[in-house]
Amino acid sequence: MRVAFTVNGEDMAAEDVWPGESLLYVLRERLGLPGSKNACEQGECGSCTVYLDGVTVCACMVAAGQAAGRAVRTVEGLAASGGAGPAPDSRLSSVQEAFVEAGAVQCGFCTPGLVVQADDLLARTVRAGGPAPGDAEIREALAGNLCRCTGYEKIIEAVRTAAEHEERAVRRGGAR
Ligand code: FES
Ligand code: FES
Image 1: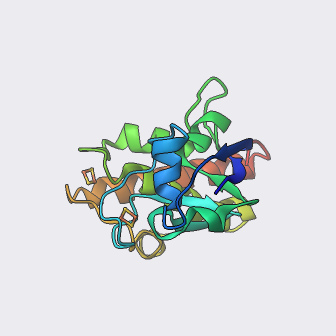
Image 2 (image 1 turned 60 degrees about the horizontal axis):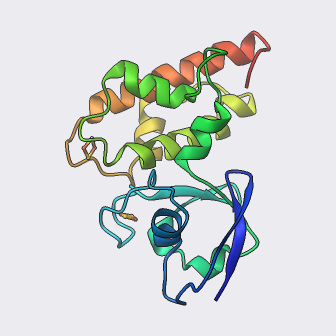
Image 3 (image 1 turned 30 degrees about the vertical axis):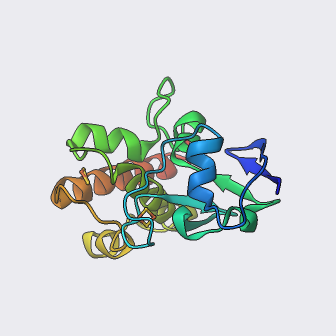
């Protein structure tokens, strides 16, 4: 079957998709978007997290056909859009920059999923005009994202930094 949808704001289509194929497989193997990682393929680790119509999902658990006509946003889309990038010349989102700065990337396999999930947390909090999430809220939001390298402290630090940055930007009335 043919599956057409938008990915990171662009119309895309995959041909000859098998009904059991996952959205993750289509993104990675058919559309050339390897950012979302395939680590467990069982909905357990969150490495494949993407937005589907603005809601985060595990792309390995979504049949590609379910995405037809809908809007998918992957970690590549956060980078390309600049997300809530702190520097005007930066192509990285604030969360991505903070991960780099905090040294929160070890092998990097869990990173794309964490970045998308953290982006969603900031969208629901600081970008919605609320306060920056505290550590407990950050940990809860990321509870479904497993890091095999276990560098959780740096990950929490990165999200905290990005949240504080975005909160300051909102207060200044600047970028979201
Ligand atoms: S690869 Fe999808 S949740 Fe682990
Ligand atoms: S950095 Fe290696 S799995 Fe998280």
